[in-house]
Length: 317
Image 1 (cartoon, one colour):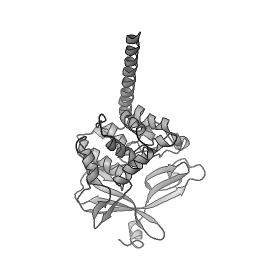
Image 2 (cartoon, helix red, strand yellow; image 1 turned 180 degrees about the vertical axis):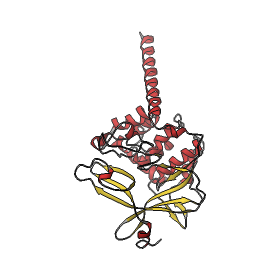
Image 3 (cartoon, rainbow, N blue to C red; image 1 turned 30 degrees about the vertical axis):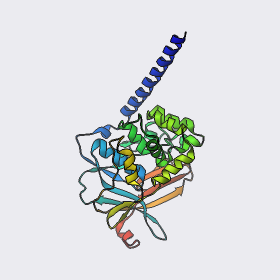
Image 4 (cartoon, rainbow, N blue to C red; image 1 turned 90 degrees about the horizontal axis):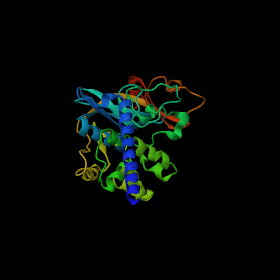
């Protein structure tokens, strides 16, 4: 009887492992396949935070794609508007892929909610789990609630066994991915970490630590710090050296800011508004969006193209 029970338990575990692997393989078949394109050369568009920076490091390590453009949100302010700055490196040559922001058109990886309803259209070149599962504003609480970095960590099969807790905690601090575990959304947290991304070790790591310990890790490495431009070069107070010390022995990733100079490509108005009425798509709110995200069920943030000549009269470069 004891032997029979042991065999049954092992058999159940084996079936569960196979089921998770099948789910992950099925998911990979459902997303746009350009993520594994080794025949064409691509650049990357970095945004202003660690989720994008970490994502770019993964893509550099796995695909040898380099940062060639940057999209910095709220980069300039005056009394009337906030401005998003789109810069391009002096050596940029390739089609650029957005990392951690939801472009209206073009290739990107992101974790944002963009669909207003089940009939809404979306960018079919985006790799976004909310798109894949049809999650929209009407099912807001079911949205993917982890980081773009964790999506890429899973997608490119980076190490998950025997990682130090501090490295897993750091990854879970990005976009506050741990938050749902400690605030009543454990089922959703489990679904995305374990069932979809096949990262059960990260889920177990949350069980071994308190929320306060995660907050301390976030502060230690400057996870909330931003990336900014000064004299055409990118800067940040994120503890890049400290993070690389964690990554050095356990992963192929190495985080760094590009040393190239960046020059203005475009400006956008950075707008956050409450959603009123019953809009069916972003175009009911904005005529010419570049990127956007439904940040709360009744709130949306978007970047709207503006005329550069008019802007130069209002914002000192």
